[in-house]
Image 1: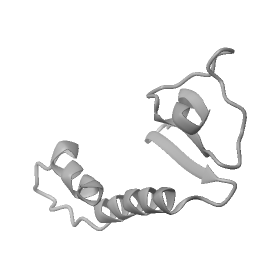
Image 2: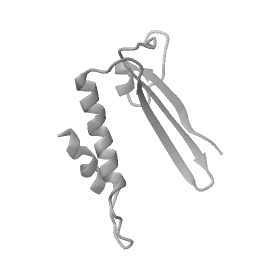
Image 3: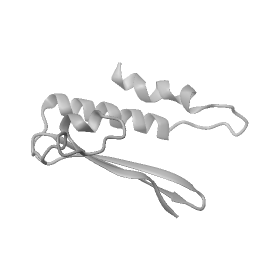
Image 4: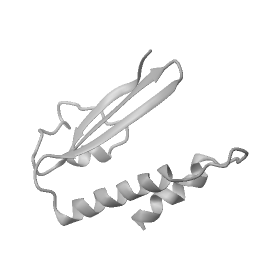
Length: 103
């Protein structure tokens, strides 16, 4: 049906800015040594999606590899949750499962 928000395309520290929108004075050039983030969303008849991808074109540092791995582990943790049909679990209840890898 259409986009759910404008696509966010950012490099380096701009990727940490919520709803970042490039401006002439803040936009950064692609850099092999910086993380590139692309966040896009769409609305369909049956729901809304948000797809975020982080890409590193060069050789990431050990620190970046560790950060990426921790976020991946959090996503996998959420993916593996067994949702009881009669539960009243909310996103806030599940948040701790994803974030535990960041502590």
